Structures are given as C-alpha cells and as structure tokens.
Amino acid sequence: MNFDIAIIGGGPGGYNAAEKAAKLGMQVVLFEKEDLGGTCLNRGCMPTKALIHSAEAYESMLHAESLGIKTGEVTYDFAAMHARKAQVVEELRKGVEKLMKAGKIQVVYGQAQIAGPGVVTCGGETYEVKDIIIATGSKVAYPPIPGIREEGVYNSRDILEGEGKMFRSLIIIGGGVVGVECASIYRALGCEVTVLEAADHILPVMDKEIAQRLTMMLKKRGCKVEAKAMVQKIEGTPGSMTVTYLDKKGKETVVTAEGVLAAAGRCANVDGLFAEGVEIEMFKNAIVGDEVGRTSIPHIYVIGDAKAKNIQLAHVAEAQGANAVAVIAGKEPPIDMSVVPSCVYTNPEIAAVGVTEDQAKAMGIMPKAVKFLTGANGKCLIENTDSGYVKLVTDSANGRILGAQLVCPRATDMIGELALAVQKGITAEGLHAVIHPHPTFTEMISGAAALAEG
Image (tube, rainbow, N blue to C red; front, side):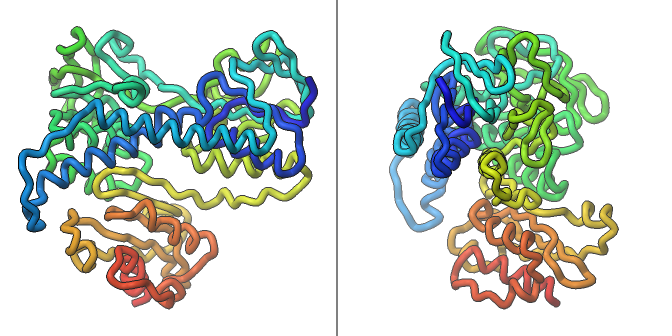
C-alpha cells in the first residue's frame, strides 16, 4: 500500500498533522496502537480536567452557605464522576474519528514499526510512504526507587481510566503538573494527601513564586507538601503502603497511606518503533529532531513528547505537527514556536508564558516586574476566590512585555492574550490601551499593564 505520508501516533500531534496533510491533498495513513486522541484525550489532559471540574463543583457546594445558598447534606458519587468523565472522553474521541473520516484518512490500529526510510509495517502489512512523522508521545517514567513498581503503587493511567481509584489517603511522588492536579482532585474529595517532590519546590519548571503560592494554597486545604524529599523506598500492600524518605534536613521520615501515585514525570514512548538495523539519532531514549522535526534519517520527522529536549505539552505537539506537514509540503512553517504558554489546572488556576524576572536578568535584560492582586478585582471578590495575582515582566528599557505569570481564576483562558502580547512585542502601554470589559477577570491584565506602564 502506498501513501504520501505516514503518521505514527494518534494523539493531538498526530491526528492534527494528519488533518493538515489531508487538507493539502496528501494521501495519509495514521497508525494508532490504542485509541485515537492518545494519552491526552483518553488518560491524561481531558479526563483530569473533567474530574477536576466535578471535584471543584463538589467543594464549592460545601461552602455554598457563604453565598446565601442553603443545602442539605452534600455528598459525591465517585463512580458517577468517572462515568461522566468517560462520557466526555468518548464524545471527544468520536469527534476525532469523524475528523479522520471526513479527511479520508486511513486509520490503522496496531503497533507500527519503521522498517526503513519510507517503509512502515503494522499487523503483517507493509506500507510504502514518502515521509513519516513520529508522534508516539510519552509514557510514565519511574525513578529508581525500590518498590515503585509493586502493587499498591499506581500511575496516572490507573487513576484516570475506567472507574479510577478512590483512596482515603494517598502519597503522591512528584510535585509536577500531574502530581499537583491529582492532589487537587483527591483533596477536594476529602482524601488525605501527601506530595513528595525531590526538587527545591513543586512545579520545578515554573517560577518559584508560583510554586510558593501553590504550596501555601495546598497546605491551606489540608495537603502535606514536602520539597527536597528524597524517597528511599516504598513498601506494603494495596491499602496499606509505607514510603520512607529523607526530608530537606536529611532526616529519615516515614509516611503511610492507602495508596501511592507515581507522578515523577514522563519519557518518550518509542518502544518497538524501529526495526532491527534502523539507526536514528537518540538522546536519553528520545528521538533527536531539528526545529521542524527533521531527524537524522531523511524524510522521517518527530514531534511532541517523542522528541528529545521537547516541552511535553499537547499544544506543542499540535503546533509541531502543523509545521512538519508544512515543511513536507514545501511550505513555510506556519506556527511560531518561540512563545509557548503553560497551564496548571489547580484551584486557582496557574498559567505562564515568556520569561520570568530571573530569566530576563540572565539574558542581560533589566526587567520590571509588577503584580495586580486578585483582591483588587471586583469579579474575584464576587466569586470569593483565593488570593492570587497577575504578574507581568517587562523590559524596563522599552516597556515590551517579556513574560507573564498568573495565579488566579481563569488563568488558563487569559494566558492566550498575554502569549499574543509576548509574541508580537506589545508594550505595557499598548496592552493597557485595549479596553477590557467590566466586571471581568481580564481586567487584572489591564490593571497589571497600567502598573507596568507607571
């Protein structure tokens, strides 16, 4: 069977690349070994956010009397929450299937393998193609901790697929995005949560001030958060697990819970991808690609989490897929990859784009950083939100917006405006000149711009 392009992996990077290629008139074959939508749609981003929405709705009902609402006993149905999550996932997956059908894209389910340049095999069939895009995503990474692969230790897939896993107490190893979002879900449902992070602070890739604010909020809600925690071993049986770790002072500490969640990161998923004899440049078990995804083998591209030194975000994979398809078609890459927003769906939400104050200084730029607090925003007061802020980092020489960090309601929605500001080199004065409707959360952006403008 002959095709113009083969895309291996049906996640956001893969299926969007397939759609773009089909629209350019290419004959496309898309390989997916499990479900269309990949990890993000089926057992990652989307299930997490569906559960967060349910957990936050439950938590808000517990405090409804402060808004003048009288309720009876408020409870939750864990199985029903997961049933709704499954319904959302199924609907989204069907949408992707319809998209592939509309583009006349041949979808092949099974483990695809690259047998050589222009040759892919799957299920005993051989497919000859002109170009290949690898979009196989990532898998759970397990640090070398004794006992981490034993029963009673779960990963994100275990708790997001099917009916999930409910715990009265849970130890989360890893304070990255997956760890803190899962901590938010389980704590909102009344679970005793302990988060152990080996780095100096949780969310280690984000601004330290954001991490400090989130740590304070998690502790306020009853979570135990330990940074600089070096886990030594995990022992026990499901329902009674023990984690031994060294705290930041080097003191051996033991904590027990019904379950342990391994959330210490993800790594490239390239198992079985290459046939014997196919040699491609790798770095730490991920595939090396240039700015548009070209690998060391001509006509083979890599995008998303399978790519070495890449930002592991669904929207990054999607953008890289669009650029790779454009290059294959002889066109200029349409997406600017220099500005990438990051989001964390805790309560309140967290979002960031561009550079931090410290990063600006490291670049030799004298930054000006200002914060507009949620307490000065009418919509935040109306909705009785936690304390937070919108922080802008500008170039003190010309007022250009270099970055932004948000800890506030709807931060993940508002960051798009600030990503545009960073990408287009808009100044604080220019941003403040835009009318923002009242009363809205977005007024915090205008307020921060006014402070930066001086």
